[in-house]
Length: 337
Image 1 (tube, helix red, strand yellow):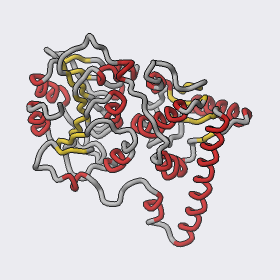
Image 2 (tube, rainbow, N blue to C red):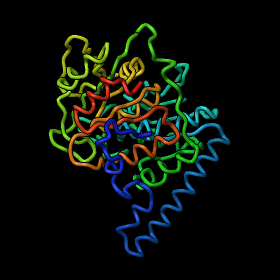
Image 3 (cartoon, rainbow, N blue to C red):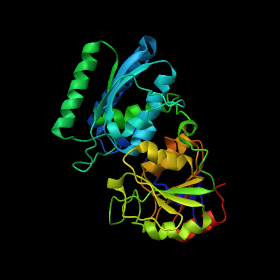
């Protein structure tokens, strides 16, 4: 559920109209011939994924990949489906970015995949959109080897390199009861960490306003502003994708390339604060509410999809603030508890 932190915020203004990533959106700009061709493509894609899913549950082993896309897409579309298959006794062989693998565990800390071809993190060289990217040659070679193994195995293989298939079929198809998340707080929460803590993600992607993320934020200034209302402010995230921050008082810098370290900060907090980004979905996995801060012109691009794809896996509320003052007032009153 999404909740504005202030009565000044009109929840309807947060969302674009008719902007969710469903097939109807793809049809809008097409002529009759294009619509017919797209209908044929989507029909084949639906048959493909249903066949894969049925054969996988029947044979209890499959191959799926590559996942070399954005973190939010991993948390919403790849990890929940692999978790669903694992929970149903399937041996899932994957090809995925190695940075994401530490999160691919169950609530006992065991891997939810059978075998994996890990891909190095290449986002400094080229950045994906969703799961669409032209990767560096060495990464492509690793995937090609995985694909060859998958095709020669005789087991069901779900190729995620088809962007049309991924964007309009694979993601939406999962919403029909084909997702699961393990409560990872059982693994990563440290009972020795006490108090009312907050995790802050100092996102660094742009120096200007973007429709998805809003205006840039001075994260050290924000951390200092909310610090009086928490025992600890954990600043975390991947170092390469984080703004410059430093420790001060109860502000603790815990940037890490290991996503388990990041998840531990979240699990040991009462609230997660971030811009609209993939990090907002980590709260699902450790049962912690999230406060989004979005500065700038509304609506928020992609927020409708962010909420729609939480339908099966959302465990706590998402709060929205449109400036630092609203967020400070929200945490001061402890409205998230």
